[in-house]
Image 1 (tube, rainbow, N blue to C red):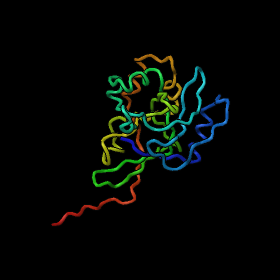
Image 2: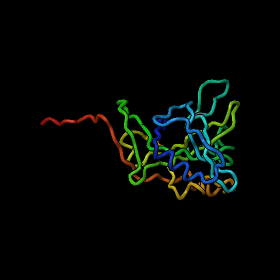
Image 3: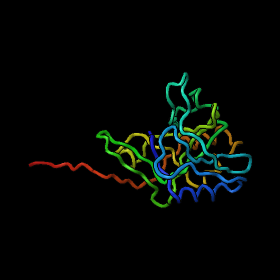
Image 4: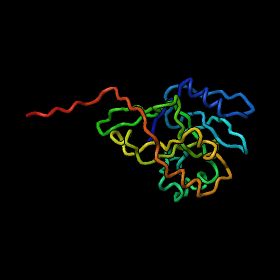
Length: 198
């Protein structure tokens, strides 16, 4: 599960580098921690172009009963709320890193081992008031599993165009939903020590 992530100046630079044909100046909503319901910058396809857009995090639930902020990769194509978006409206959410909490509610932050930016797979949808996005999650890899059993579905930079390609077939989308993210750096402010007594 991903319920908070963060962006920094590197994230902004990478977004503008990748969004080659935005055709307009984008006012970045904010740097620092991004929480559900807040505006953030995401990448989406528009024909052959990749564009940067400000969208709010979370699909509105029926009758205004909160937000869907994540969608499970394993079942996303079976859920009415998400199916149309994963087929037609995929996006990428760039981040410097993301947070997870363990059972003791200790927070851990995760970053890429070899890049300043992580690329989280997502989907988006138009609602009254503007576009909103959801982060796709998958089973945790060995870097995250000691802290949490879920994590964002992460793409490599070279996979962004394929994920955003509006003409990509269902077979391509399904294969990308099954991928396992690579290793990450984990940092915890406080790590509980375990002692054994003889």
